[in-house]
Length: 339
View 1 (cartoon, one colour):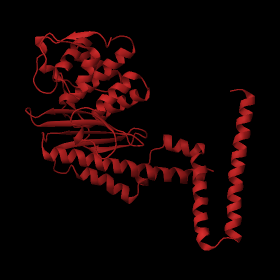
View 2 (view 1 turned 135 degrees about the vertical axis):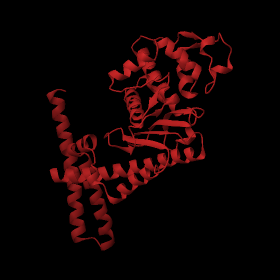
View 3 (view 1 turned 60 degrees about the vertical axis):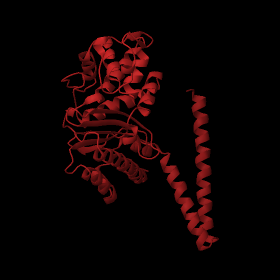
View 4 (view 1 turned 60 degrees about the horizontal axis):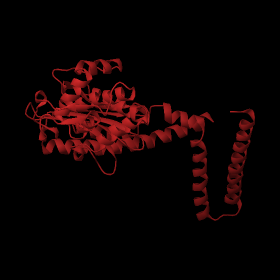
């Protein structure tokens, strides 16, 4: 920026500040000498709002909101109770969870490092890796893959309805693998990528350890939130493939078990009822301050599972909103002290 533009910008900021200051002084004079009690209260509120808005535009406030984590020792009793209300859902239930705020990285959970069979959740890291390869020009999403007899599989998906020999573009396979949790599409994709160890190595370089016992492997809530963190970082790049991935996650199967109210949710579920009742879900929740939520369970496809997953999402949204209201108040107070 040139010195002249900087000077003009500083001059403009000075006049804005001067105008706001004059408004405040005028309100103070009017409240002190001319107003009745009722108007004084309204004017007082207006004064507080103006002061608060000025504080919110300071660098110290913005820095606090961007970088500070509201520590649990600063939580109100209401916020502590909301957190415990979520944790209490898991008392005596064969399930584990982890909540992670994607802006401040504040996390809490119940047995968040405990591993269970991942089932189809492990399709997500493979698909994200494929899109990253496409972004780098190493994978052509228009290339056609052939449904071969060796890929035949039961379970979730829609490719099984088609004949062996049918061809699909890689982009279509990626969509089906997320939206319909397609087992055949996933096998076709892994072959095209060079096998699951290639995916494992990519994620290891990001700092995550995928443990494969088969093509699906294990999952902890902590690892699930790691997947969602990387999806969110990818989404923030604004790349078309990133938008496509998140859009498919927003419209994928079994969304009704994790979507509470009007909050948009991008998720990937994993289900293996025959092998022990495993039902898991990892999700990106688009509140004003997005958060990751991963739940693993051996509750199977049951009403208990459905109620637990929905209630966890509902309370987590409430916690998220309360957390940021308290963080805002904390940063306002901190900014006042610094000014």
